[in-house]
Image 1 (tube, rainbow, N blue to C red):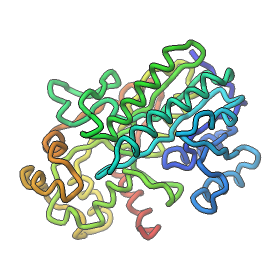
Image 2 (image 1 turned 120 degrees about the horizontal axis):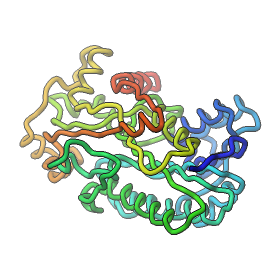
Image 3 (image 1 turned 180 degrees about the vertical axis):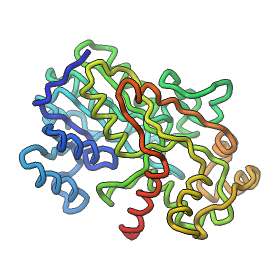
Image 4 (image 1 turned 90 degrees about the vertical axis):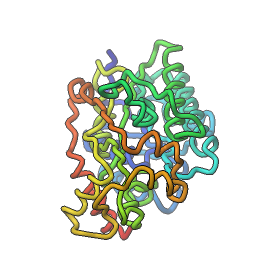
Length: 347
């Protein structure tokens, strides 16, 4: 049981990110003081939404310079905080030229650097870490023999060469639990979102969520979609889950954040129902053999197709609903609002 003083500031790492921006906004609206770390607080573009939140909540938000790969850079901002919400980590899908450098190292070393600062900061009593469902499973084929994935499962099939993003999230979370278990002052709660969709507070945040939605714009699925199922959760619900986990004394362990399982074709059907027929919205699923044939040209590996296309998927978020009281928006709402924002932003 860990009770957080509501008068103490909350540290949010990667404060300008897609999920973190909503966490910052909700914390401020709930009356908390927030310290948000960013790589460069003085950069002229990309932080406008945080400056706007500062103006709306004067004296409640401060920005602090910190870098995932710079040891000690989080210590000053953390001093006096009881709750640390660590969201900063790269999210890249598709072709990654150097996964060790672009994904694994920032995720692993960044987590270690943040938690090293936690170890050195006596005021901190709880860390909420943004993990992912990909730290629970690597491929849909991992469902073999299971009814559903739960927080008790761990990804054991991803490597730096196969599903490197999933691998990076897995090794980072394992390192976090190892660090937490080596001491007794602070506890750890991890949040595991599926594919996060929904409106962004800034157009400056680049993520794999946007990459996924761009497939419904670039005509890459004009002839049809792969029979690929994925979990979807709204960014606003993910942000709320972090905050509730931070301030619920009995919160512990891992929490899956997922609204629904949806196929690529299903997303296309949602978009067609709201925005009308477009060539970029798929109307059928293509044979797996054809998808496998063209996979390299689409930035996918054939092993990814083998282990994900045509497989079922189930993610159990019951613990998040019951213990944290988080109710998830329907997936169609998140899909429609994100696509509408893409239109409004000229993307």
